[in-house]
Length: 448
Image 1 (tube, rainbow, N blue to C red):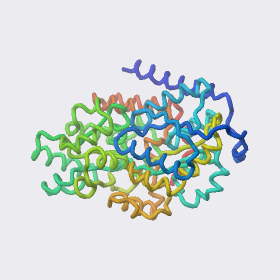
Image 2 (image 1 turned 180 degrees about the vertical axis):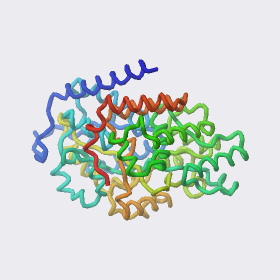
Image 3 (image 1 turned 60 degrees about the vertical axis):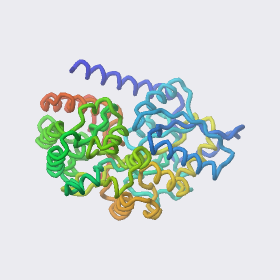
Image 4 (image 1 turned 45 degrees about the horizontal axis):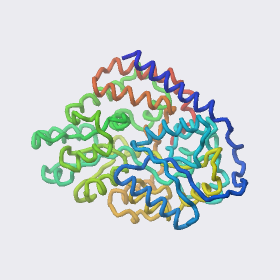
Protein backbone atom coordinates (compact mmCIF):
# COMPACT_ATOMS: atom_id res chain seq x y z
CA UNK A 1 0.00 0.00 0.00
CA UNK A 2 2.81 2.43 0.90
CA UNK A 3 4.63 1.64 -2.37
CA UNK A 4 1.41 2.28 -4.27
CA UNK A 5 1.03 5.64 -2.56
CA UNK A 6 4.63 6.64 -3.30
CA UNK A 7 4.29 5.64 -6.95
CA UNK A 8 1.08 7.61 -7.28
CA UNK A 9 2.60 10.70 -5.69
CA UNK A 10 5.64 10.49 -7.94
CA UNK A 11 3.39 10.25 -10.97
CA UNK A 12 1.45 13.32 -9.95
CA UNK A 13 4.62 15.31 -9.41
CA UNK A 14 5.82 14.26 -12.86
CA UNK A 15 2.54 15.37 -14.44
CA UNK A 16 2.87 18.81 -12.88
CA UNK A 17 6.49 19.14 -14.03
CA UNK A 18 5.51 18.14 -17.58
CA UNK A 19 2.75 20.75 -17.60
CA UNK A 20 5.13 23.44 -16.37
CA UNK A 21 7.91 22.49 -18.77
CA UNK A 22 5.62 22.34 -21.80
CA UNK A 23 4.06 25.75 -21.20
CA UNK A 24 6.53 27.15 -23.72
CA UNK A 25 5.01 30.61 -23.84
CA UNK A 26 5.30 32.39 -20.46
CA UNK A 27 2.32 34.19 -18.99
CA UNK A 28 1.75 37.74 -20.15
CA UNK A 29 3.16 40.46 -17.91
CA UNK A 30 0.65 40.91 -15.06
CA UNK A 31 -1.36 44.09 -15.41
CA UNK A 32 -0.68 44.40 -19.14
CA UNK A 33 -3.59 44.67 -21.54
CA UNK A 34 -4.41 41.46 -23.40
CA UNK A 35 -6.70 43.16 -25.89
CA UNK A 36 -4.06 43.86 -28.55
CA UNK A 37 -4.13 40.83 -30.85
CA UNK A 38 -3.94 40.12 -34.58
CA UNK A 39 -7.27 40.41 -36.38
CA UNK A 40 -9.07 37.09 -36.19
CA UNK A 41 -10.13 35.58 -39.47
CA UNK A 42 -12.96 33.66 -37.82
CA UNK A 43 -15.07 34.08 -34.70
CA UNK A 44 -14.82 30.76 -32.88
CA UNK A 45 -14.55 29.68 -29.27
CA UNK A 46 -12.90 26.36 -28.53
CA UNK A 47 -13.86 25.46 -24.98
CA UNK A 48 -13.17 22.56 -22.62
CA UNK A 49 -15.70 21.85 -19.86
CA UNK A 50 -17.02 18.95 -17.78
CA UNK A 51 -20.71 19.79 -17.48
CA UNK A 52 -22.30 16.58 -18.75
CA UNK A 53 -24.38 15.27 -15.80
CA UNK A 54 -28.13 15.97 -15.42
CA UNK A 55 -28.56 19.67 -14.67
CA UNK A 56 -25.01 20.38 -15.84
CA UNK A 57 -25.62 19.67 -19.54
CA UNK A 58 -28.66 21.93 -19.50
CA UNK A 59 -26.59 24.64 -17.78
CA UNK A 60 -23.90 24.40 -20.46
CA UNK A 61 -26.61 24.86 -23.09
CA UNK A 62 -27.85 27.93 -21.19
CA UNK A 63 -24.31 29.38 -21.18
CA UNK A 64 -23.91 29.02 -24.89
CA UNK A 65 -27.41 30.36 -25.54
CA UNK A 66 -26.48 33.50 -23.58
CA UNK A 67 -23.31 33.84 -25.65
CA UNK A 68 -25.29 33.41 -28.88
CA UNK A 69 -27.73 36.10 -27.79
CA UNK A 70 -25.00 38.69 -27.31
CA UNK A 71 -22.48 37.53 -29.94
CA UNK A 72 -24.34 35.55 -32.62
CA UNK A 73 -21.23 35.46 -34.82
CA UNK A 74 -19.20 33.36 -32.37
CA UNK A 75 -19.24 29.63 -33.17
CA UNK A 76 -18.75 27.39 -30.14
CA UNK A 77 -16.55 24.31 -30.48
CA UNK A 78 -17.11 22.14 -27.40
CA UNK A 79 -14.76 19.57 -25.94
CA UNK A 80 -16.76 18.21 -23.05
CA UNK A 81 -15.36 15.49 -20.77
CA UNK A 82 -17.67 13.45 -18.53
CA UNK A 83 -16.60 13.19 -14.92
CA UNK A 84 -17.67 15.23 -11.93
CA UNK A 85 -15.34 18.02 -10.93
CA UNK A 86 -13.26 17.76 -14.11
CA UNK A 87 -11.18 14.73 -13.16
CA UNK A 88 -11.20 13.38 -16.73
CA UNK A 89 -10.99 16.79 -18.34
CA UNK A 90 -7.75 17.64 -16.56
CA UNK A 91 -6.01 14.58 -17.98
CA UNK A 92 -7.09 15.32 -21.56
CA UNK A 93 -6.49 19.07 -21.29
CA UNK A 94 -3.01 18.79 -19.78
CA UNK A 95 -1.97 16.31 -22.43
CA UNK A 96 -3.03 18.76 -25.10
CA UNK A 97 -1.31 21.69 -23.39
CA UNK A 98 1.86 19.63 -23.07
CA UNK A 99 1.76 19.19 -26.85
CA UNK A 100 1.47 22.96 -27.31
CA UNK A 101 -2.07 22.72 -28.72
CA UNK A 102 -4.05 25.16 -26.57
CA UNK A 103 -7.82 25.71 -26.66
CA UNK A 104 -9.18 29.24 -26.26
CA UNK A 105 -10.60 28.66 -22.80
CA UNK A 106 -11.37 25.91 -20.34
CA UNK A 107 -13.35 25.38 -17.17
CA UNK A 108 -11.25 25.43 -14.03
CA UNK A 109 -11.87 25.86 -10.34
CA UNK A 110 -10.33 28.66 -8.31
CA UNK A 111 -7.69 28.22 -5.64
CA UNK A 112 -4.67 25.96 -6.00
CA UNK A 113 -5.88 24.40 -9.24
CA UNK A 114 -5.96 27.83 -10.87
CA UNK A 115 -2.59 28.71 -9.34
CA UNK A 116 -1.07 25.61 -10.92
CA UNK A 117 -2.16 26.76 -14.39
CA UNK A 118 -0.94 30.30 -13.73
CA UNK A 119 2.44 29.15 -12.42
CA UNK A 120 2.77 26.99 -15.54
CA UNK A 121 2.19 29.95 -17.86
CA UNK A 122 -1.07 28.63 -19.27
CA UNK A 123 -3.37 31.61 -18.58
CA UNK A 124 -3.28 35.35 -19.24
CA UNK A 125 -3.87 37.90 -16.45
CA UNK A 126 -7.20 39.73 -16.74
CA UNK A 127 -6.62 42.92 -14.75
CA UNK A 128 -7.90 45.13 -17.56
CA UNK A 129 -11.04 43.06 -18.10
CA UNK A 130 -11.88 43.06 -14.38
CA UNK A 131 -11.45 46.84 -14.38
CA UNK A 132 -13.63 47.23 -17.47
CA UNK A 133 -16.37 45.10 -15.92
CA UNK A 134 -16.03 46.52 -12.40
CA UNK A 135 -16.14 42.91 -11.33
CA UNK A 136 -14.39 43.27 -7.96
CA UNK A 137 -17.26 45.53 -6.85
CA UNK A 138 -19.97 42.92 -7.42
CA UNK A 139 -18.39 39.65 -6.23
CA UNK A 140 -17.58 38.66 -2.62
CA UNK A 141 -14.03 39.37 -1.49
CA UNK A 142 -13.27 35.66 -0.72
CA UNK A 143 -14.35 34.79 -4.26
CA UNK A 144 -12.08 37.45 -5.75
CA UNK A 145 -9.18 36.14 -3.63
CA UNK A 146 -9.82 32.59 -4.83
CA UNK A 147 -9.22 33.62 -8.47
CA UNK A 148 -6.32 36.01 -7.81
CA UNK A 149 -2.68 34.89 -8.02
CA UNK A 150 0.15 37.23 -7.01
CA UNK A 151 -2.28 40.13 -6.92
CA UNK A 152 -3.77 39.59 -10.40
CA UNK A 153 -7.07 37.97 -11.42
CA UNK A 154 -6.67 35.28 -14.09
CA UNK A 155 -10.24 34.08 -14.63
CA UNK A 156 -13.86 35.19 -14.51
CA UNK A 157 -15.98 33.20 -12.02
CA UNK A 158 -19.57 32.55 -13.09
CA UNK A 159 -20.83 31.02 -9.86
CA UNK A 160 -20.10 29.95 -6.32
CA UNK A 161 -20.69 26.37 -5.30
CA UNK A 162 -21.21 25.55 -1.65
CA UNK A 163 -19.68 22.16 -0.87
CA UNK A 164 -21.05 21.25 2.54
CA UNK A 165 -24.78 20.75 2.00
CA UNK A 166 -26.70 17.78 3.37
CA UNK A 167 -29.68 16.89 1.19
CA UNK A 168 -32.45 14.72 2.58
CA UNK A 169 -35.69 13.03 1.57
CA UNK A 170 -38.20 15.60 2.82
CA UNK A 171 -41.21 13.29 2.81
CA UNK A 172 -39.33 10.56 4.67
CA UNK A 173 -38.13 13.01 7.29
CA UNK A 174 -41.66 14.37 7.72
CA UNK A 175 -43.06 10.84 8.04
CA UNK A 176 -40.47 9.85 10.66
CA UNK A 177 -40.69 13.27 12.36
CA UNK A 178 -36.96 13.87 11.94
CA UNK A 179 -35.22 17.24 11.91
CA UNK A 180 -32.50 18.05 9.39
CA UNK A 181 -29.13 17.14 11.00
CA UNK A 182 -26.91 20.09 11.85
CA UNK A 183 -24.12 18.23 13.68
CA UNK A 184 -22.37 14.88 13.46
CA UNK A 185 -24.34 13.68 16.49
CA UNK A 186 -27.59 14.68 14.79
CA UNK A 187 -26.57 12.79 11.66
CA UNK A 188 -25.76 9.56 13.48
CA UNK A 189 -28.99 9.78 15.46
CA UNK A 190 -31.03 10.33 12.29
CA UNK A 191 -29.29 7.40 10.60
CA UNK A 192 -30.13 5.17 13.54
CA UNK A 193 -33.81 6.11 13.33
CA UNK A 194 -33.91 5.64 9.57
CA UNK A 195 -32.24 2.21 9.69
CA UNK A 196 -34.75 1.10 12.31
CA UNK A 197 -37.73 2.31 10.29
CA UNK A 198 -36.35 1.45 6.83
CA UNK A 199 -33.75 -1.33 7.21
CA UNK A 200 -33.52 -1.77 3.43
CA UNK A 201 -32.59 1.90 2.90
CA UNK A 202 -29.05 3.27 3.09
CA UNK A 203 -28.86 6.35 5.27
CA UNK A 204 -26.14 8.25 3.41
CA UNK A 205 -25.74 7.94 -0.35
CA UNK A 206 -22.16 8.40 -1.56
CA UNK A 207 -20.39 8.24 -4.91
CA UNK A 208 -16.66 7.56 -4.44
CA UNK A 209 -15.68 6.69 -7.99
CA UNK A 210 -13.74 9.95 -8.39
CA UNK A 211 -12.79 10.01 -4.69
CA UNK A 212 -13.49 13.68 -3.96
CA UNK A 213 -16.94 12.84 -2.58
CA UNK A 214 -15.23 11.03 0.31
CA UNK A 215 -13.25 14.19 1.08
CA UNK A 216 -16.49 16.19 1.14
CA UNK A 217 -17.90 14.11 3.98
CA UNK A 218 -14.65 14.16 5.92
CA UNK A 219 -14.35 17.94 5.50
CA UNK A 220 -17.72 18.49 7.18
CA UNK A 221 -16.71 16.27 10.09
CA UNK A 222 -13.37 18.08 10.34
CA UNK A 223 -14.98 21.53 10.22
CA UNK A 224 -17.18 20.71 13.20
CA UNK A 225 -14.36 19.03 15.13
CA UNK A 226 -11.88 21.88 14.74
CA UNK A 227 -13.77 24.99 13.67
CA UNK A 228 -13.05 27.31 10.73
CA UNK A 229 -9.65 28.62 11.85
CA UNK A 230 -8.44 25.06 12.38
CA UNK A 231 -9.77 24.01 8.97
CA UNK A 232 -7.74 26.73 7.23
CA UNK A 233 -4.61 26.09 9.32
CA UNK A 234 -4.76 22.38 8.57
CA UNK A 235 -4.91 22.78 4.79
CA UNK A 236 -2.20 25.44 4.92
CA UNK A 237 0.10 22.86 6.50
CA UNK A 238 0.26 24.58 9.87
CA UNK A 239 -1.01 21.60 11.90
CA UNK A 240 1.18 18.63 12.82
CA UNK A 241 -1.27 15.91 11.85
CA UNK A 242 0.87 13.19 13.43
CA UNK A 243 0.39 14.69 16.90
CA UNK A 244 -3.02 16.35 16.45
CA UNK A 245 -5.97 14.97 18.48
CA UNK A 246 -8.56 16.86 16.41
CA UNK A 247 -7.59 15.17 13.16
CA UNK A 248 -7.53 11.75 14.82
CA UNK A 249 -10.98 12.30 16.33
CA UNK A 250 -12.36 13.39 12.95
CA UNK A 251 -11.04 10.21 11.30
CA UNK A 252 -12.64 8.10 14.02
CA UNK A 253 -15.97 9.82 13.42
CA UNK A 254 -15.56 9.30 9.68
CA UNK A 255 -15.12 5.59 10.33
CA UNK A 256 -18.25 5.69 12.48
CA UNK A 257 -20.34 6.61 9.42
CA UNK A 258 -19.30 3.57 7.35
CA UNK A 259 -22.25 1.35 8.44
CA UNK A 260 -24.66 3.98 7.10
CA UNK A 261 -23.08 4.44 3.64
CA UNK A 262 -24.14 2.44 0.55
CA UNK A 263 -21.87 -0.57 0.03
CA UNK A 264 -21.39 0.15 -3.69
CA UNK A 265 -20.15 3.73 -3.19
CA UNK A 266 -16.77 3.08 -4.83
CA UNK A 267 -18.50 2.28 -8.15
CA UNK A 268 -20.79 5.32 -8.23
CA UNK A 269 -20.33 8.92 -9.38
CA UNK A 270 -21.70 11.87 -7.43
CA UNK A 271 -24.85 12.18 -9.57
CA UNK A 272 -25.57 8.48 -9.16
CA UNK A 273 -25.39 9.00 -5.40
CA UNK A 274 -27.93 11.81 -5.74
CA UNK A 275 -30.00 9.36 -7.78
CA UNK A 276 -29.99 6.95 -4.82
CA UNK A 277 -31.85 9.54 -2.79
CA UNK A 278 -34.14 10.40 -5.70
CA UNK A 279 -35.07 6.73 -6.14
CA UNK A 280 -35.72 6.12 -2.45
CA UNK A 281 -32.68 3.88 -1.96
CA UNK A 282 -30.89 6.35 0.32
CA UNK A 283 -32.19 8.95 2.73
CA UNK A 284 -29.48 11.62 2.45
CA UNK A 285 -26.42 12.67 0.51
CA UNK A 286 -23.76 15.29 1.21
CA UNK A 287 -22.95 17.20 -1.95
CA UNK A 288 -22.47 20.69 -3.36
CA UNK A 289 -25.10 23.06 -4.70
CA UNK A 290 -24.90 21.44 -8.14
CA UNK A 291 -26.87 18.51 -6.71
CA UNK A 292 -29.97 20.71 -6.88
CA UNK A 293 -29.85 20.49 -10.67
CA UNK A 294 -29.34 16.72 -10.47
CA UNK A 295 -32.36 16.35 -8.19
CA UNK A 296 -34.65 18.49 -10.32
CA UNK A 297 -33.46 17.33 -13.76
CA UNK A 298 -32.38 13.77 -12.95
CA UNK A 299 -35.01 12.70 -10.43
CA UNK A 300 -37.80 15.18 -11.13
CA UNK A 301 -37.83 16.19 -7.47
CA UNK A 302 -39.00 19.59 -6.29
CA UNK A 303 -36.90 21.42 -3.67
CA UNK A 304 -38.78 22.14 -0.47
CA UNK A 305 -41.33 19.45 -1.35
CA UNK A 306 -39.49 16.24 -2.24
CA UNK A 307 -36.10 17.15 -0.83
CA UNK A 308 -34.71 19.56 1.72
CA UNK A 309 -31.19 20.82 2.32
CA UNK A 310 -29.15 22.22 5.16
CA UNK A 311 -25.55 23.44 5.34
CA UNK A 312 -23.64 20.90 7.39
CA UNK A 313 -22.38 21.28 10.01
CA UNK A 314 -23.76 24.41 11.65
CA UNK A 315 -21.66 24.21 14.81
CA UNK A 316 -19.46 25.76 16.11
CA UNK A 317 -20.24 28.26 13.31
CA UNK A 318 -22.23 28.23 10.11
CA UNK A 319 -19.43 28.22 7.55
CA UNK A 320 -19.88 27.81 3.81
CA UNK A 321 -17.09 25.87 2.12
CA UNK A 322 -17.07 27.12 -1.46
CA UNK A 323 -15.39 27.03 -4.84
CA UNK A 324 -16.16 28.73 -8.17
CA UNK A 325 -16.39 27.51 -11.73
CA UNK A 326 -14.35 29.88 -13.86
CA UNK A 327 -13.04 30.61 -17.36
CA UNK A 328 -9.98 32.50 -18.58
CA UNK A 329 -7.92 32.99 -21.74
CA UNK A 330 -5.03 30.69 -22.55
CA UNK A 331 -1.68 32.20 -23.51
CA UNK A 332 -1.92 30.60 -26.96
CA UNK A 333 -5.64 31.06 -27.54
CA UNK A 334 -6.36 30.82 -31.28
CA UNK A 335 -9.24 33.31 -30.92
CA UNK A 336 -8.35 35.73 -28.09
CA UNK A 337 -10.84 38.46 -29.01
CA UNK A 338 -13.77 36.06 -29.27
CA UNK A 339 -12.65 34.60 -25.94
CA UNK A 340 -12.65 38.03 -24.29
CA UNK A 341 -16.20 38.54 -25.56
CA UNK A 342 -17.07 35.16 -24.06
CA UNK A 343 -15.69 36.27 -20.69
CA UNK A 344 -17.74 39.46 -20.84
CA UNK A 345 -20.82 37.28 -21.14
CA UNK A 346 -19.64 34.94 -18.35
CA UNK A 347 -19.54 37.94 -16.01
CA UNK A 348 -23.02 39.12 -16.95
CA UNK A 349 -26.34 38.50 -15.19
CA UNK A 350 -27.68 37.44 -18.59
CA UNK A 351 -25.50 34.32 -18.40
CA UNK A 352 -25.32 33.76 -14.64
CA UNK A 353 -29.06 33.78 -14.00
CA UNK A 354 -30.12 31.04 -16.47
CA UNK A 355 -26.91 29.04 -15.99
CA UNK A 356 -26.73 29.06 -12.20
CA UNK A 357 -30.46 28.55 -11.76
CA UNK A 358 -30.22 25.47 -13.99
CA UNK A 359 -26.96 23.97 -12.77
CA UNK A 360 -27.38 24.54 -9.07
CA UNK A 361 -24.71 27.06 -8.09
CA UNK A 362 -25.09 30.45 -6.46
CA UNK A 363 -24.54 33.62 -8.46
CA UNK A 364 -21.00 34.95 -8.44
CA UNK A 365 -22.51 38.43 -8.47
CA UNK A 366 -24.09 39.56 -5.22
CA UNK A 367 -26.04 42.31 -7.00
CA UNK A 368 -28.43 39.76 -8.54
CA UNK A 369 -31.69 39.40 -6.63
CA UNK A 370 -31.73 36.05 -4.73
CA UNK A 371 -35.38 35.60 -5.70
CA UNK A 372 -34.19 34.85 -9.23
CA UNK A 373 -33.71 31.35 -7.83
CA UNK A 374 -36.93 29.34 -7.93
CA UNK A 375 -36.09 27.31 -4.82
CA UNK A 376 -35.98 28.40 -1.16
CA UNK A 377 -32.66 26.61 -0.63
CA UNK A 378 -30.60 28.90 -2.81
CA UNK A 379 -32.63 32.00 -2.05
CA UNK A 380 -31.59 31.61 1.57
CA UNK A 381 -27.98 30.70 0.73
CA UNK A 382 -27.53 33.65 -1.65
CA UNK A 383 -28.96 36.05 0.94
CA UNK A 384 -26.68 34.58 3.61
CA UNK A 385 -23.61 35.02 1.38
CA UNK A 386 -24.57 38.61 0.56
CA UNK A 387 -24.68 39.48 4.25
CA UNK A 388 -21.95 37.17 5.61
CA UNK A 389 -19.07 37.17 3.14
CA UNK A 390 -16.62 36.43 5.95
CA UNK A 391 -18.23 32.98 6.36
CA UNK A 392 -16.91 31.79 3.00
CA UNK A 393 -13.84 29.51 3.06
CA UNK A 394 -12.25 27.96 -0.01
CA UNK A 395 -13.13 24.28 0.11
CA UNK A 396 -11.33 20.99 -0.52
CA UNK A 397 -12.64 20.91 -4.11
CA UNK A 398 -11.34 24.37 -4.99
CA UNK A 399 -8.38 23.53 -2.79
CA UNK A 400 -6.22 25.37 -0.35
CA UNK A 401 -3.89 22.40 -0.77
CA UNK A 402 -1.55 22.37 -3.79
CA UNK A 403 -3.32 20.82 -6.78
CA UNK A 404 -1.26 17.63 -6.89
CA UNK A 405 -1.41 17.17 -3.11
CA UNK A 406 -5.18 17.45 -3.31
CA UNK A 407 -5.40 14.39 -5.58
CA UNK A 408 -3.10 12.43 -3.27
CA UNK A 409 -5.26 13.43 -0.30
CA UNK A 410 -8.42 12.19 -1.98
CA UNK A 411 -6.75 8.84 -2.60
CA UNK A 412 -5.71 8.54 1.04
CA UNK A 413 -9.20 9.29 2.33
CA UNK A 414 -10.82 6.90 -0.15
CA UNK A 415 -8.44 4.16 0.95
CA UNK A 416 -9.38 4.87 4.56
CA UNK A 417 -13.09 4.64 3.80
CA UNK A 418 -12.60 1.27 2.09
CA UNK A 419 -10.43 -0.14 4.91
CA UNK A 420 -10.30 2.20 7.93
CA UNK A 421 -6.93 2.38 9.65
CA UNK A 422 -6.53 5.56 11.66
CA UNK A 423 -2.81 5.26 12.46
CA UNK A 424 -1.79 4.40 8.91
CA UNK A 425 -3.92 7.20 7.47
CA UNK A 426 -2.46 9.79 9.82
CA UNK A 427 1.04 8.75 8.75
CA UNK A 428 0.13 8.93 5.05
CA UNK A 429 -1.44 12.38 5.48
CA UNK A 430 1.54 13.62 7.48
CA UNK A 431 3.93 12.32 4.81
CA UNK A 432 1.82 13.89 2.07
CA UNK A 433 2.00 17.31 3.74
CA UNK A 434 5.80 16.97 3.87
CA UNK A 435 6.20 15.57 0.34
CA UNK A 436 4.29 18.43 -1.26
CA UNK A 437 5.68 21.09 1.10
CA UNK A 438 2.14 22.20 1.82
CA UNK A 439 3.10 24.88 4.33
CA UNK A 440 5.11 26.76 1.71
CA UNK A 441 2.86 25.98 -1.27
CA UNK A 442 -0.37 27.02 0.48
CA UNK A 443 0.95 30.20 2.12
CA UNK A 444 -0.79 32.26 -0.59
CA UNK A 445 -4.24 31.63 0.92
CA UNK A 446 -5.54 34.17 3.44
CA UNK A 447 -8.73 33.85 5.52
CA UNK A 448 -10.81 35.67 6.45
